[in-house]
Image (cartoon, rainbow, N blue to C red; front, side, top):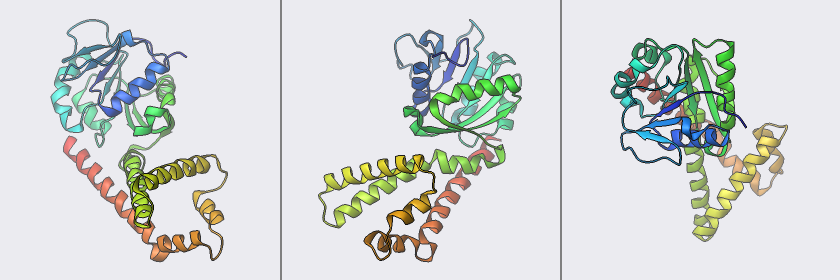
Length: 269
């Protein structure tokens, strides 16, 4: 495979998400010798990858700079990077809540700006990446899609909906992990050994997810197919469905995450 971009790639920060994306890009053909990771710790990343604690003072202009630090660190790194980012560099940000206008304000000479919201399953190539671009022409948009394709499902989203996408897809894995944990605890409360219940819950969710992904029906329809009238599954679903309790709980959960994302956006303006 060949990587979507030619030229140096800088990652500013390389925590769980940035590191996962880099791993997938290396598997897709990115030459590690083209990668510079800028991280405060200076900790090594892998063979062939250059790790620095500050941007290099000279050298080739990067083809891409990806901001992968915590959103609260934006104003610490922006003054160091801004002089090195011009119209020839694709600026990619995975900073939750930081809008393209806020990025433009800090990187006024930047050319194309790509806001991306990945989730943790990108580590397996099974993630979701929401994209919004500013200043992208058709060629750069195609490059952006090819760049993110190894990570999973790629969706272009209006920036006005980014807080909602971040809550649903970005935070969604954590919500599902909590559900798996609760399902396992419920199995233990019903009498199963804790370790066995944990294995059963995890395998059940994994299999059900794969089945739902490959089915031609909605998950709701699949649930009704599993639940025969008067059966035990139907009795359990009746608890979830009573007075719309589950729907209401999930709506409140996403609303709380959306509100937090909007607070971060306001703080970055």
